[in-house]
Length: 104
Image 1 (cartoon, rainbow, N blue to C red):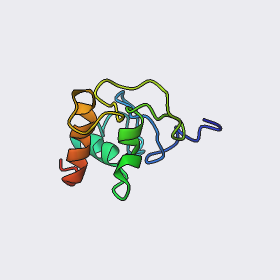
Image 2: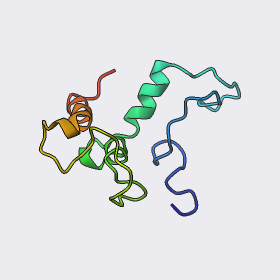
Image 3: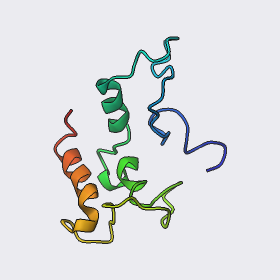
Image 4: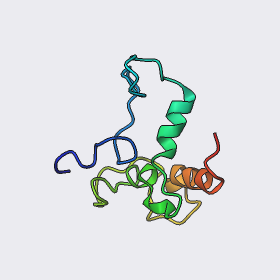
């Protein structure tokens, strides 16, 4: 990353945070720690027009920082395997959730 470009505001690849801070920018710390906020943040990392380009899928699959492959891959996100293979079970679960409209 250069100039903080991959860790900017919501919908630009910023990492999810679970600690208490002013998520909804209303001046009160810790008042927006709820399921709706988390759901909105997660959905903000889905590209519904090009699902495989979604940051929600790409980063755990090992494509960090502007799509560069070879970074650390999370278990269950091996996209080199065929759909349904055990080594990509978590990737497939997210794809199926997205294809079903990413319901809450």
